[in-house]
Length: 69
Image 1 (cartoon, one colour):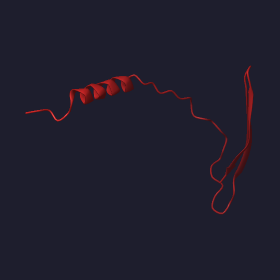
Image 2: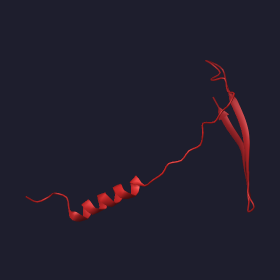
Image 3: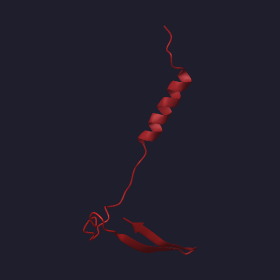
Image 4: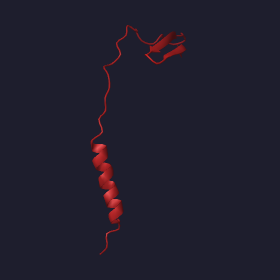
């Protein structure tokens, strides 16, 4: 009886499983805010912000950042 999977496909599957097993995920702590929650039914919450990222090579500005709820 023959195996329905080719040796090349088996090798590829083993290679994928080996490489993905060494992947590492990273993340930071949760953002702490003093936001009391949602504004409630029929009310608006509007947040405006600006970000500036500065390095020795460049400065990147993101404005305006708008969050409407």
